[in-house]
Image (cartoon, rainbow, N blue to C red; front, top):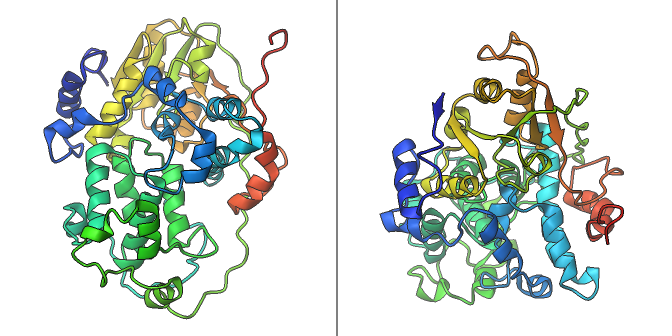
Length: 450
């Protein structure tokens, strides 16, 4: 265990970048040292609210497919729980004359909620194909990211621009993510897991559920068909920004109609597949909740804000965030991603930041503060769920370390939708047909307030 609080506390971004680079020397860095200082997104609540106030739901619905459209770019703060889905929905509905005018934006929030529910159902198996591929590809499978892709020297202007932007800023428009994933999987034959892992490590909004299931959707292992695009589609939604200066214009990998590309990328035989069914997970936690009187607030990757449920419920309690070495090894977060995370944490008054196994650090810091339990925000993350189960048991035999037992209470997020009737998460359309109406309903104020 190591206390990182002082080294990663409030400081100018340049100093924070240097500290993060020193503590995490294996984190991937932008090609230029100054690139990490010019991230478009700054972590923390103030930056999140500033961007939230600027959203335009009507313009979003009309232009969101265009790279220069009125997209919100709220995903980094949503991923880290600085903003909640309900909060963004409420802001969107408040800015339109009729709730239906915010449908496009709210439906995108619905995808994030959906992916999280699927993750809760499948646990740590986000890197396992949900179903067999919808079509068999013609290319041999590559298990690693190609060197020319990583160096942004493929010769395709669009692909090289996307890779350069991802490495430098930690963000891509959703269409750019889909195009890049499609080209890697269907043209270059990269195994979707390898591509998903690479993108996850760099994205400021890196979330295994949204990222890996989206790659599966593109690959056709969690969709009715694989996603492909052609040059016409790319030019339409980028204004031709890449194609007009591309050295392979007219002979690139995505020239032609969708039918022609389908024949080029896939074999004619379509494997027979039955309908995929995913039963929603039971409510977490499975044990009776006992709310502590003097709790330790355990902040996790999807709840690093003073406004997240556990921290908001106990504003005077000590707060703790644990950098888990297993998470570092599994996701290999880039320097940019770690800097954004640390800026979010620096915005939380009194937070402690420790490096180590949560099963050991959380009980130890709880004991140091004289706490009688732990509170944590609800999460689908299997790593957090497993650690919480270990923490509440007295030295469980399967634990990696000896831990002292502490009660663990889970604080729910504000409701985004009513999913009580959802019985199958096999397709987003099935889920959304059940929850779309309730997702447009703004949060009701507590009784006695207007």
